[in-house]
Length: 100
Image 1 (cartoon, rainbow, N blue to C red):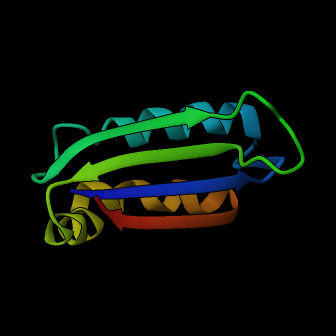
Image 2: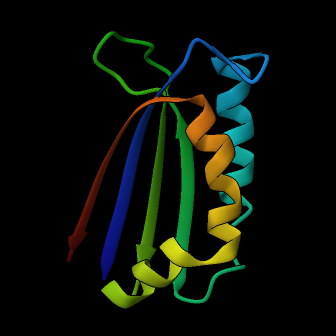
C-alpha cells in the first residue's frame, strides 16, 4: 500500500480570504475527490489545531493500492481541477510518499 501525505503552510490572506477560511475550503474540495478517482482508497484532510510556529496549517493523508494508482491520481482531471485553488493559497508544501 502507498501512503501519500502532504503538508501545507498557507498564506495569511489569499483569494480575498483569511487562511482559516481557505483551509476549510481546501479541506472541502480535496475531500470531495473521495470516490471520484479509481485507485484512491482513502483521503482525508486535517486542519491544524496547535497553531504552533513549527506546525503546518493543513495536511492531506491518502492511501493507494500501488504506485501506479498514485500516479493516476496525480494526473486525473478531478485532482488537477483543485490544484489552482490549493496552489493560490499555499505558501509552502511538503510531501512524503511511502510504501508499507
